[in-house]
Image (cartoon, rainbow, N blue to C red; front, side, top):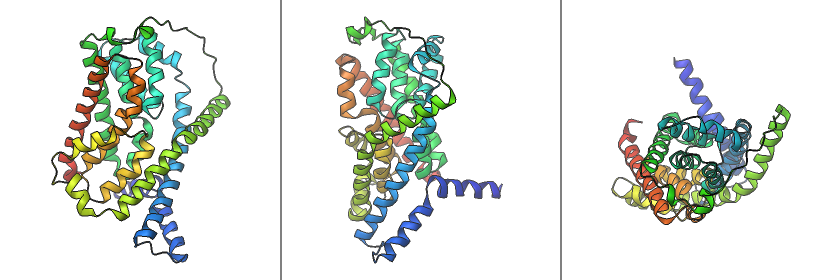
Length: 336
């Protein structure tokens, strides 16, 4: 058992966490005369380490997930979801959301396609909530920073929010709140060409390049913000605003994430820096969920597909779920 634990710790710290890279950068910067215990040297070390680590994980994860995703093109996904009814359809939609694009702006076109194909609105919203919040990439990234327990609980709770939210929307009978051009749309059933392994690898590699070009600027911004938080903002300030002293930290963090547009890769360095400075775990995770699920650009795009009433209910469900998850993690943090 001890050997298994040692092996897992090595995998989490040295493979996923890439602590060897942090030590290497530390040695190189010290060799160049930079004091990594100081603000400037520490900021440079944080920036270089997180940039390389996140981009490497990004490329590897997208390659793997896109290969898996090649087995679930939109047409096939529609057919699979169409075979199920009730809560099982919501559960399956939420699970399929874990192997789809990495931000809500990328998920909305799929949501529109599924709704046009005649899938129940609750099922499509379970997919829309799950896709940006709990994709497989978030599981691995969270594991690299917070450990496997936090990552697994986060994903499970995210799926619960997706299933419960979709089910509630279905029970409220809000089909007439979807824009008419989508409700009256007719999806064309295009025969899917069977891909060979070489085709799937090519598709996955193209997804790596496309997503990396789109996401890397946000990673750079996120890591830059994280470096400033980590080395320049006093810990007492972070603790007073986002620590135990502020019972509304979760709510503030959720709201703060809304104006931002990024995916999990861009929020990870900020979350990492906030946690190291004394912010509560639930506060940090609420911020991440707010950014990935409720970003203002995503809501503007979604408004073009649904009417204000349904958009408001969607935002209320996601916000309520995120806040509950945040306070739950704050409660269990001492036991983690």
